[in-house]
Image (cartoon, rainbow over all chains, first blue to last red; front, side, top):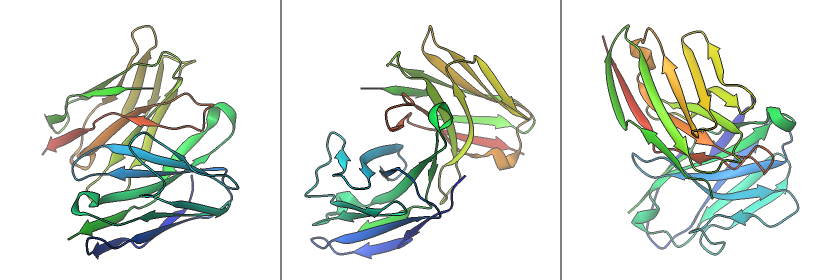
Length: 116
Length: 113
C-alpha cells in the first residue's frame, strides 16, 4: 500500500478566497491524482499530476480554477481558487503503486472544505 | 470515455445475510475493476480488485465476479456483519493509461444487527 497524508484535514473558508491542499507520499510515485467528492456523492477525477509536466485536467475542470503543482515524486498541491459555496467538497489525492498489470490506486485521507 | 453505473444505491440486509452490488461499464477496453469501501468520514479503502484475465476472485467473505462479454462486475459479501456497513464504490479503468479510475455512484450498505 502507500502512506499518504494531506494538509489541511479540513478548513472553513470565505467565498472569493483560495486554499492550497498538500499531498505527501511516503515514497516516490509517478502518477498522482486529485479527486473531488461532493457531499453524499461519488468520486470525480479533477486532474492527473505527473512530475515535470503540466497536469492533465478532466472535462469540467480548468487550470485557472484548480492549479496543481508537482515539484517532485513525493509531493503535490491542489489549489481551489476564488472559492464559492459550490466548491464545498472533500478533496482527495491518490497515488498509483505497482508495476504493469498489478498497478493499484490508494487514497489520501482527504481534505474537507466548507466554503461560506 | 468510460461510464460506470452501480446498483443499488442503497442496500439494507440483516446480519449474516449476503449482499450483492452490481456495476456495469461502457468501455470494452477496460481491464481493471477495483472496489473501494468508504466508512463515514474516512478515505476510500481498496477491498478487492479483479483484472480482465480472470472471471472471479475471492478474499474471505468478499468475492468479485467479472463478465467481460456483458460488461458487468459484481461484489458479493457473505455472512455480513455490522462493520460491513459503509458506502461501496466500484470503478473501472484501462490499466495502462495512468490508471484514471472512473467510479460508480456508490452503494450505501446497512447491515442490521
